[in-house]
Length: 158
Image (cartoon, rainbow, N blue to C red; front, side, top):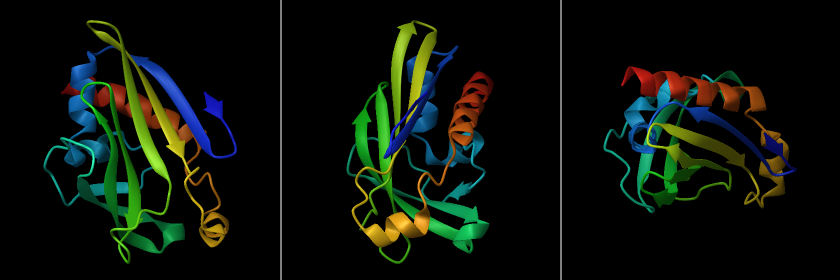
């Protein structure tokens, strides 16, 4: 685990090939199955993520965010079987990500074992009002670790 003023990174070894883990990460419909925060409810866009620049919409729920809401995720990183990441934008400004990012990095250890790193970063948040309102980190280290645990369970069931 690595923590700084602008990001938190957790990692764990998952007993699965990187390609199998990547297949889950790039299918938005599967995201609720490995969300350790419990905020992700469902995907509106169910097509597989195939490149940077794509966008997918997720239905979310969080009491401190007013209950149900939607997030427009802009894919910012894509390297097949190695990395995928996105920056969320709110429903009221779907083409303007606010600056926080989710990044999954996969490092194959061998043919059937992969180290997965998950970074939650808010280093691109420049709006001081957003920083104060959100109170980063909004997602805890424990929730990030739970996301990796759930990812390991989901890939073993796939």
